[in-house]
Image (tube, rainbow, N blue to C red; front, side, top):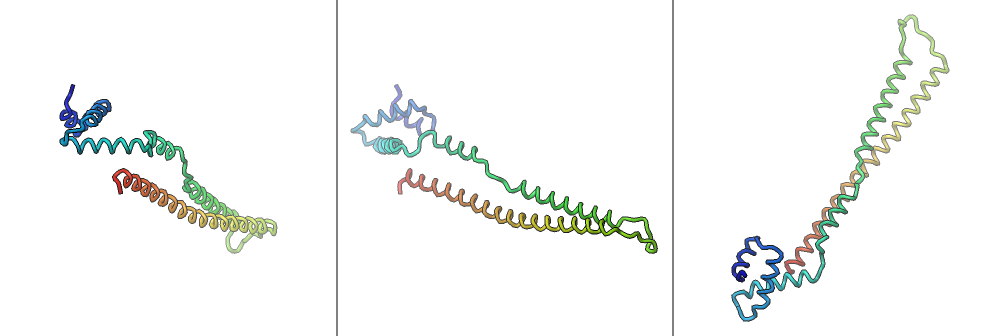
Length: 175
């Protein structure tokens, strides 16, 4: 059987198994008269008392990581891409409308008359696209506000985690 000194040396090098640590703890608790191991005995008693408080179980990290990995934050990027695609489509539609409306093989002397019906159709299309563009710009402004709010929540989450771990460290180390 190993001596306390051998086990302590191995423990401080980080080479002990859980079983060896338990043996060391038991040996230190049995040694009442030795002042040589008083600090180690106090340390192991402290570890045991903290473990008995059971504030954090062995599954704590697993639960936290599972929670973090299971939450699917909503990204605003796809909305912004959709907005850009709609803007580009509206610009293309207006350009095609202008091209079709003004396209002609005529010279200045020979201008064709555009029917009143065609002109009204063009105006209605133009107004509809202008209105769509207006609403899309409003959505873009709202998305920008949502991005700011999203960033604020991310910062708040970081602060909450830092505060939680600081409190835990203070509890472990003692105020």
